[in-house]
Structure formats: structure tokens, C-alpha cells
Amino acid sequence: MAVVVDTSFLYALTDRTEADYAACVAALAAEPDAVIVPQSVLPEICYLISSRLGPDTELAFLRGLSASDWRIAPMTAADMARSMDLLETYRAADIGFVDASVIAVAERLGVVRIYTLDRRDFGIMRPAHAEAFELLP
Image (cartoon, rainbow, N blue to C red; front, side):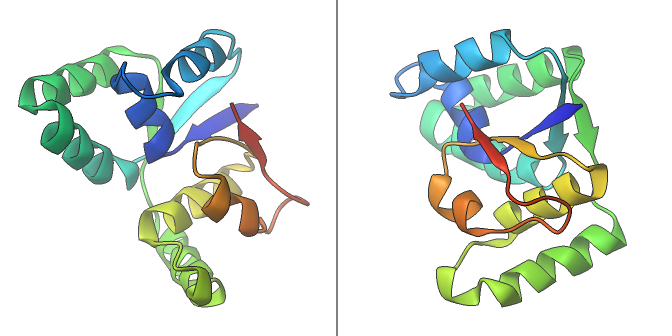
């Protein structure tokens, strides 16, 4: 079993002033399974951290990620195609590419648990491999 993380969760882990910081830290500390970061999330999270918290915090985040046992999941051509399908299916909701790619990677890996604070986007999308995603924390 594993869990996939999205940008909002990673940002809350990085910014101690975020309202959900403590809940995210606690959830991660109790997580027994592998943590998977879709590669498509990295540019977005790095931009947010750098623009809001500064380049030193961005570098510290990347160093921590590199030193962790978290897995970075590269996007495949099939993930790209599935992301585009999701963007088309949920066009009216304007879910965005990064969220669609998180879903595509989770589907490919058979993961149903997603760490996210974005209940709107992830709550409306239906995975191809399960009834629904379990959104945490």
C-alpha cells in the first residue's frame, strides 16, 4: 500500500504558519506506507515555496525530499494521456493539469489514498480503479 501526496499537502508541511501544518505533520508521522510524490508536482511546489517562503526554504525542501525515503514517480506517456482525459472530463471544474496528473499517477500505481488539502478538486474526480479516493488528512 502507498499514499500519493499533492502540492497543497507538501506546502502545508513546509509552511509552519499554515492552518493545517500540525494535522499534516501528524498524518505523515503516523503513515506506515510508502509516500509517493508525482514528479509533476515538483515544479508547482517549488514555485510556491520559493515565491512565498524564499529560495532557501525551497532548497531545504528539495534537500529533505532527496534525503527521504519518499519515491518520486515520473510521468509516463499513459499518465499524460489520462491527465488530458481528466482535464476534458472535468473541464467545467477547471481542475488543472497538476491535480489531473496526481490522479493519473495514483491510478497507474493502484493507490487510493491521497494526502491533499484540496477537497474540491480531488473530491469530484472519480478514479478509474476504485469507487473513490480516500482524501487525507
